[in-house]
Length: 604
Image (cartoon, rainbow, N blue to C red; front, side, top):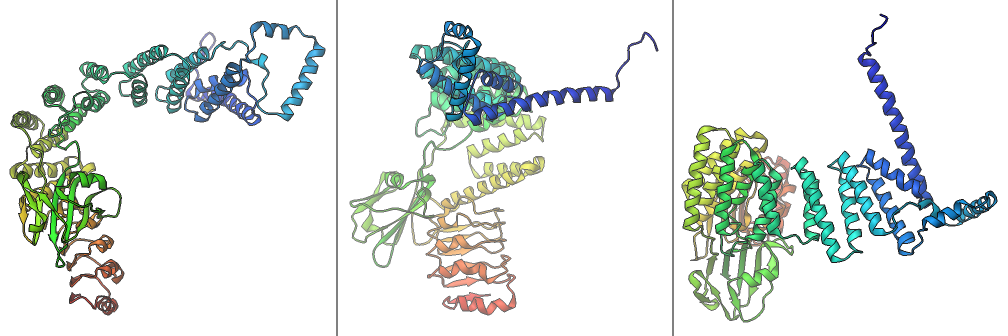
């Protein structure tokens, strides 16, 4: 009706928005094409420089545009600033007063130069630019800042900003550099105040603090300020976990990831955060890191010296982490008058299991428990040395028992809180003992149903705990004897976990688990008897490196082809092979018997 404002329906609004978007798209595409053409000709001018800035403010994620802009900046630095070719404003005014004839002649000359040479630029096009490279770089930082306002999580913008900062600091004094890095930290603070979990800004901040030599103590205080402002700031907790070992490094024999005094303070702080909001995952992650019981450097797990019939000895050393040959020689309790060559079990330069051959008349000794030295000549059969474990101090155990009590209280309030369950399991593992490990395994089993998306992780963790407990019970400290047996039946192992713990075992029984992959089996270098019955094995290739194997049992492993047994044919010492209750075609049975005709006892 007359006099009434017509209200547009949704279809009309959508059509108008589509038209506006199309206009913007056409302009954006035209600008991109213009820059690409300029780059292809190698001819940069002020219009290209300004256009790239406008396009990047619209779309800061266009990495190619940032690359083009860096090319233009480098060109300007080389041609206009380093060679002092940037014309003054007076020169520009003189150029504007030339006659039309002169302009035409200059245009013809310019066309000829463009046809014969690239990277030609009319310097009058660049008037109005800053007079120094420092001023240009500073103005470029302002351009990047405006782009980050549009998208604070732009990979290209943060990368370009740090590149500009590096270029700027290359040409200024150290005092001015410190001012630049200080201002950049303030910008990081601004962006983190708007989004405290902007990992792009956190990465940029770490790079800035490294270049600006910002003390780790200052950054540690910064992380604490953010945490006290918001307990849910996961990034601040993570940053703190990286800084604490630098500022409060633990002694070599400590069971903590940081110094003991600091450990107690951090533990109290994170427990308060946990009780504030038990459902917040951020402090729980920090608590799990704080409870890590891992030595700061690799340690010897076991070393076995086995005497052979010819009088020589073979030494097997296993370590808590992969090491190189030099580290093996430095950490080994074997001390010889002559140099020996260590060989890794996998043939790689880094491994957790190493072997060496020692001549029968070699002079030397082995350091066993308590620092006692046993002459190598006195080892007539076998000697095993167990590395010293990192002990948990009484004070730490008291703190952990208090934490355990707190976690149990939270568990009573919320029985299905996965963070409470995980922390309970971590504390119990840290405290050790068979009962605690059993309870931790039950909690991990419960977690598999509470958090089914990570059931595989919990299964691996539970199996590792069971295996470690079985190794601790069955393989004692310094022992002499020819055989070392390990019974790992029905532990629920999904794969061959922690094989370096079994490197000294001669008899290994892993029957009735769920092992499909034998990766890492090459570390069972001392094994002579191996039982893998009831495991759904898919590949036996890792067994081909176990040259000591004499007896192997693969009953009920779901093997379907004689070709799967090919790796075993390389074992010259094999004397007994059990292949009962597999799925071999009847036609392959004779072929299998023929392939292992040298085996004394073959059961198919």
